[in-house]
Image 1: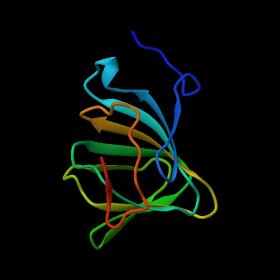
Image 2: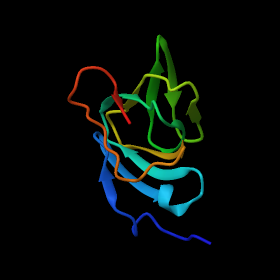
Image 3: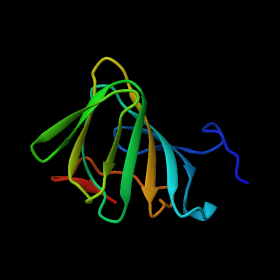
Length: 123
C-alpha cells in the first residue's frame, strides 16, 4: 500500500502554479496523480503529446479552451484531454484554482512547462 500526503512530496513549479505529484511512474501504478494549483489570473497554453490527462476541480474557478470551444471549470467539474488536445487553462483572477490531475502513462514527477516559448507547452 502507498500512503502519502501532499506535504511529503516535492512541490514542483510547473509554470503557472504548483504541482504536488502524489503518484508518479516510480510508484508503479500505471498512472500519475497530482494536486495541481493553478495561479490566479494565469493563462497557460498546454498540450500533452505523450500523456492523456483528466482534471477534477476541487476549488476555485476558471476555464479550459480547446479549439473554439470553452468550458467553465468549477468545483465538481472534470475535464479529460483524450485526444492530446491543445488547450488553454485559465484561472479566475480572484483565486487560485485547484485540480486533481490524473495522467496516463504516469509522469516521472519532475516535468515542467516552458510557457515562455511560442505555441503550446508540452511534455
